[in-house]
Amino acid sequence: VYQDYLRGTPGAKEVEVDAYGKVKKVLARKDPIPGANLKLALDSELQQKAKEVLARKLLELKAKKGVVVALDPRNGEILALVSLPDYDNNLFLTPQKEALQQLLQDPDHPLFNRAISGTYPSGSTIKPVVASAALQEGIVDSQRTFLCKGELIVPNRYDPSVVYHYRDWKVHGIVDVRKAIAVSCNVFFYIVGGGYEGIRGLGAERLASYYRAFGLGQKTGIDLPKEATGLIPTPSWKQKAKGEPWYLGDTYHLAIGQGDLLVTPLQVAQFTMAIANGGTIYQPHLVRSIVQPNGKEKKLTFSHKKVPVKSEYLQIVREGMRQAVLSGTARQLKDLAITSAGKTGTAEDPTGSGKPHSWFTCFAPYENPQIVITVMIEHGGEGYEGAEPVAKEILAFWQKNLK
Image (cartoon, rainbow, N blue to C red; front, side, top):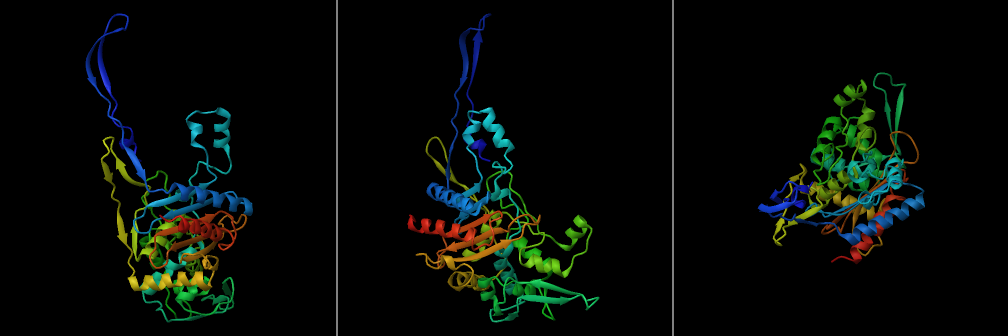
């Protein structure tokens, strides 16, 4: 991405030679101009710690693939970016045929950067975005409650004898928007996403619109190649891609981060950033500035945009994520010396192979966010058992070594 700055300008000499090719005279000379240096936002200690913690958890879970993304929600700077399995890029400096062959044929694809190119269902990490949209659109307010009996029972509108069951992971009782985020109540998000018994939901198109507004279905613009866009399914997309109509169940699945929705770990970190900082999506970036050979430093500027949600609604969502730490699915972070807010996610693998993908995304300190950490472990199981402990240990290290 920054090759034009790094390589500088080659030098040249115009020479006169004799019949034997021996230089007799230098006619003209153009001195080379050295390239610039890049100053990165990466925290090398945090990067190393994140890799170490993730690798240990993968070993414990007997999983092979995982990601950690840490960024600064105040400006989009990438503090750590880990994708495992990885590789030693010195192999390409002094290539060894056998080692390179093993690397290229490795079935776990260590050359693939899962942080920016891997696409997965988001699972429940998407629920803070859905809550933001439901509050902004007036589907619910901070006081509105629904009764969660552990499932939503929906009769077929053409044949009432046919009944569909949309299940939750447990009975949650009476929930408002904050508790729904904290305990990850599927029933609440089915209702605000797709509607139920006279309650108007967001619907597929409005869900898709807000997902796009929070940066899904498009590249974040990070200064690395091969970034994936992910996928936001819509009725028109499904008809075109699958030749099938869109059903209410598709909307319910979309509202809890399942079905055909695909996101990258970086995109999850990006929408967590917007919730943490009050509504701004900063372009994630690794390079902070360019330092010329003469020492002159040029700060780089990156784009940013606001999400279409009022700050008071984002505050309600933040309170729900804080409640998740205090009494909900993210309680493992409660005993840290730093205040935090987070959201677990458990995403079924669309291929149906193995355990679900484990997600966790969080920010800290809660009162004045300075870091977002997003963890994803392929086939890592429930969010609380795979990804959450990784984020907790990294956050504890960051807080202890905060400069």
